[in-house]
Image (cartoon, rainbow, N blue to C red):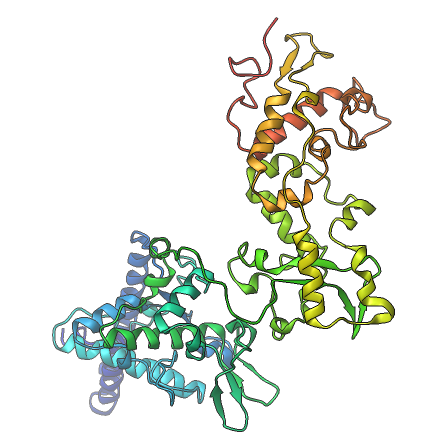
Length: 550
């Protein structure tokens, strides 16, 4: 009974010693029985551990946001056991009850910031890291157990820690968007305190220093994984840097009895806590020396390619349409204007840092836009008119013979072009919009369908007014008609659907649906994209449906 009361590893050690004594004192008979006992003890270890795993597997799922996956040794080779899922907030709460804080597990570096590594500032070797985790974690658990406190797994209960629960998490990422940035600026004393977070490494001084006027997004230097810069300096990952800097700062504010941010995982990474973040009204503009407007032009080396004319870009307006600068400027150095070289093709729909990709995403977000744009072919070649909507040929004179205008000149000309834009949604006169359209060419089972044409058009126009994106691109009066009357010239009197869509379907034009399919595809797809419940797509003859039974 004394033996079975020991921890798993120590239990096996005791039996190993027992066998040794049996061989020396009693010979083969005692050796036989000791071997039986050893097998029984070893089996009990495996059985008890397996039972523990079974209990964990059958226990109700506890979705948490503080699960930290410890897989440090994976960088040194294949792991012997699964990774460890470490619940950080659970341990933080347990230490707090003992009057302890983060310093119990994390050391501070020369700048006074907490290291994200456990009980060390740097990784020496796999053996050292393994020893630190096992001795410190198990040692703490054992100390608590010795004093009768509830604690975690002890020596020998390997599988109680080495269980990968990475899929069982409700962890949500959080970004330093413009709202959070404004709140931090207020908390740290205003725009003059940018160096609190933003810095550059000075090779001469061998430390980070203020980068006045050159502040960039943290991710421009701190990438997903630790990297080395051109001087060989090890740059911490974004996760390491953010947790070290943010948590340390929040703790310092808390020590000074000031309002501060969270220091727990759930405080930042739970949906509930993120919903409680206060919103700053009238967000102040970031001060980075950026122009209100500028000219965008593709560069080939140091020479501009302005054959179609540059794009007058309203920078100030776009700042209010995104969450942060990184929405457009991604990659080291892009904050200094090297945008196109790193951002990719501005016309790719898959490039969310580009113009077309971002505009398409905005169309999908607004239901009034999705009704028409969701049905438009994405691979259709743009017309010369659509290109000229952005590329201003009147500004080509600035780039004659490969010349590059000064930033001030480009900003002034861009501001002039932006100021001349009419951002109202254009449409034809109300009396030119048919009030109703009767669709009855296929009427057999149902009465002809009466489409409240004018009501639909006026509602679309009303929902688009005030949207500068829609206003800029809907500057042509008959452009609205193109949402339904596609593949025909924009006109106040577009051709009927039957002009192209035959009844019945014509196998000679397999890419063109028949008239019935065209009507249903156009109307039902639009209602689905705009999430309209009435009339229902499946309620053909309902009271609010499109068709009345004959």
